[in-house]
Length: 394
Image 1 (cartoon, rainbow, N blue to C red):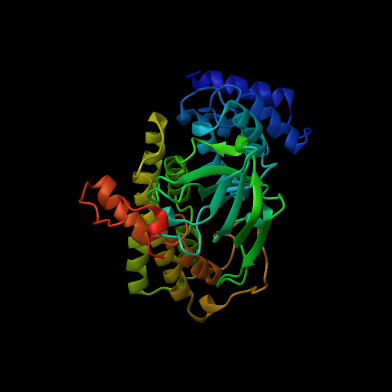
Image 2: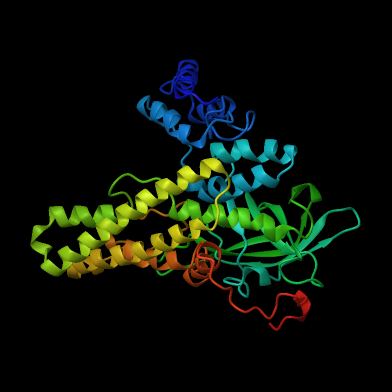
């Protein structure tokens, strides 16, 4: 399945059999998945046709022109951008069949139980424990933090320590956790914006069947790298039109409010506009490279650019608006389903963008990844490489 015309034909057949105007939204999404038009580069039977990733745009254009519903990807970004490619690569056939369809349609939202209060930048130092029981199940105890969307999620991708007697990277195993199970407690973390899209999650004697393990026991760090690499691409390499993202509202304000303009702000806006366009085109090139395989460390560079540009652009926009830019319409404690950067006011964008240099890998960690794995510079000295996790200072 490598022909754009063949994909157009299949898409039109889907539209003819399930007219968007008269078909229930969820029924249409399920039919699209079953037709292999959800993510065309996935295998047949798993929402795809084994086609080149680049041909997804052909399908999307046909469906958009017909007014077909989409799967509201922003609401389930972690599931689509991180959990799905990890399940595809490491999951059993039973796991793929169980999880991928309701994940893509949005029936089941996913979150990520990785970071911990004592293991953020140094994620491999995590201390959440999973202990194997006589019946083969695992019992998990620990705390996770900065969990986006946990309050809306049915499932979570979880890494936990299964062997404290080996070095920290070697004793981790990767699981799928049911967020509705007994012992899973989600508490909101109120942010500088006033809302709480992040959470902390406490796991107390949570029982996870071994059938929900992804990859081999003790191989969780390698499995997690697939998740993390896809996360950085999902954050920094999203598909945007020209003036998409943060630069759009700033440029629109500049055009519509000439009384706010100064020469200095003009020069800064031009610089950021060019950098945003370069980042957008670089992200497009990165997505094209994905056709050849899984994302690599290059995604770290895109995520770095995303965080820096968002913070600089939102700062410029607040400065451009002056006193008006300091206003913020709603400090209500809410638990939103998604982050809406461009649909809110400048004050919200300025405050929320502060988190961009932390979420999805801190700027400091990503700089190390780019230095060591992209540029080939010497790695920083590590004294804990061969030390058992239980013997590390904490």
